[in-house]
Image (spheres, rainbow, N blue to C red):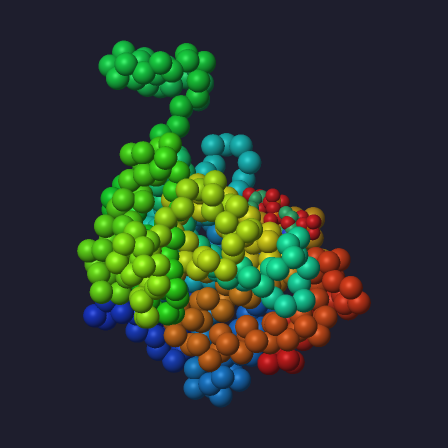
Length: 414
Ligand code: NAP
């Protein structure tokens, strides 16, 4: 077993392993957990209590998570003198499935976002965000219940690859000169430059995951979201390569939208998944005007970033939006909001986003019974109108409780 400087490996747990390309989950899996900064301290405590209670209720002591604290952000800086110590990466790589609270990105000093670093170093190429409405939660739209989507956002490339040069810098000037002279472009000298790589590799592995999810969960469609009418060789290529994966690897499971009309006269054959594509600006309208027509959405990095938050807002906001970053085997499950420092240690914030991320984690390790218990109980708690301040301000006649009391109510309602 690896030796760590500050991480203490729980004696009673076992490591998750990979066999025949599948995760093997022991009954007492060791799961690394990054508590997170700011409100991370409040929501992680609440989440661990809820998860432990659900697992106990579902499996009567036969299964139990052995949590293992690993460090990033402010706590890591105190312990190691660095924000993202190597042994945190090593531990997550070695144990495969981890839970994470939000992290502060130190401002200045050339720090890259700790979250982006984690995703890139661990090659967590799919950012997965399910969005659906919980009955009773206030929403800015008339029919929030009609939206039930899961967004698969490419996580490692696009303009997020971090390849950019400042206006006026030596490198920036060099790139502009080269483009203008050798490639006959006409870029203004006072421009900043950013590069947008989108690869076959990045696209295909992301779309493959999205289609696999649709198959596994018997979902009706996968929509490729792109801006290919303008950016033909990046976003347009994302669409083309997406269709290629669908047709080449899932031929007898899918029907493309063209085939639906040409071969099937618009009537979807039973048991097949519809593969379609929408231009990015159109999908923002469609999730508002025809939300029921969408299920899995596969997107390049930037589109997915915007679309995930827009969809989350439609069903009541960030306090309830879960997320996961997934690679070939590693899954890092995390709240989608930040550290909200003004609420830190006040025991008021909504732990829903992290709790629902933990639900995704339980589904990932195939502990579906525990996941269901939490999901149902969270719904019940909201329907009983016992909620934290953020939901309270959108709900008439609700009772406002703090973070820890909310967790207690979820446990009671299981
Ligand atoms: P934020 O922490 O997400 O908070 C913005 C606002 O969103 C809060 O003031 C609150 O709004 C609402 N909110 C966030 N989490 C909530 C929850 N659990 N329950 C209810 N309401 C919630 O965004 P920020 O203030 O822009 O960022 C603060 C720090 O977080 C920054 O250092 C940033 O880099 C970091 N960050 C980290 C991550 C991550 O780790 N994944 C993601 C984003 C940002 P009201 O005050 O209106 O209630």
